Image (cartoon, rainbow, N blue to C red; front, side, top):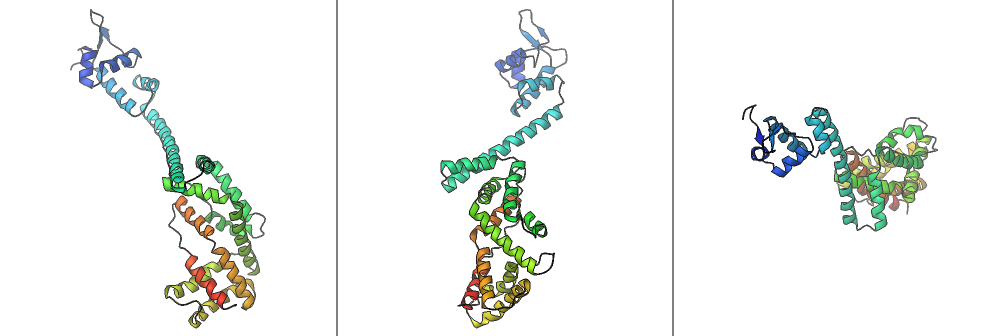
Length: 311
């Protein structure tokens, strides 16, 4: 091909792989205008039309609309700017589709009712600001009004889900379930009791700096005993119980006696509620954190050890 040669629509079709009908369509809309006409009135094009048609086909395959394509080929719009805007639009569509897929997958797995499906859909569609307000309301209900609330700022952050801009399906499903849990009055009351107990323990410790939670102390003391297969009712478990009871007695300023052991058993049973563990499992998925260690086995062992010693 040379710059002076003129080509008919049929010749352009053979060179570009587009149909005559498609080229005529683009020509009628001024995207690839003819340079001249033959004596018989047929449209004729220069070699530049081949390059324009190749660009038009590429942009159409990428999903750009014809008005935008015309401005790009006429250099009224910058192709990089158009590409960036279109990429962002596609990213939004992908996020929406990911949310929908996650909701449908959850509905299929859980056998949800129409009402539950509607709720899941609404939760998945929330904007980032709306998600923050929803979780903020939950955290306010759990931590609000406590004298030690400021001391637990780190705890609040550790309980805050942050769904990424491009979550995968598992993260979306985890977010929906976590959001549902956060709106459950019974779950809110459960977590509130845990935080109130923790705040009371910290207040009795006489320091403004949060001390190690009793559940963590119990895990550290009883974990090795559980791993070794030690019977919680056996005499060999006595030193283990004495060790975490000494920590608890010091924490709240009371002597280690039967009443205190009953109090700690009730406290650990509260912490051992499976809903608490589920919340932190879901939180780890949403935030992309490693899966948390389950406290259930060591707490079960410790509660049993306390119960047999307070019977």
